[in-house]
Length: 96
Image 1 (cartoon, rainbow, N blue to C red):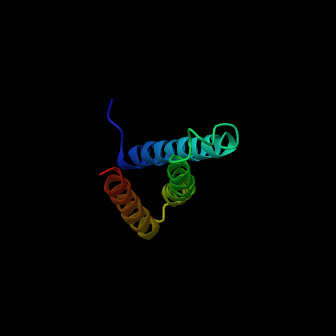
Image 2: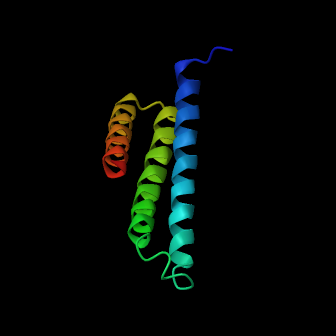
């Protein structure tokens, strides 16, 4: 089954939005449980803060991506794809 460019863009933007929600949920979950398990999560609180920031940023990119595709703003699509590329580079740099 072949998808046209607009359908692919909607699918990718939706997946970006889902990944952002997962990151945000992970960060909130670790921060919420920090008071119970502070001795275990002591080093993980920085990662949780990073997940919160990346989650919010990725949700923003996903929403802008969906809006730009559905409203057919090609100039905004270019900025969103560049922002996504930079986010992926930041994630890879922090994993190494």
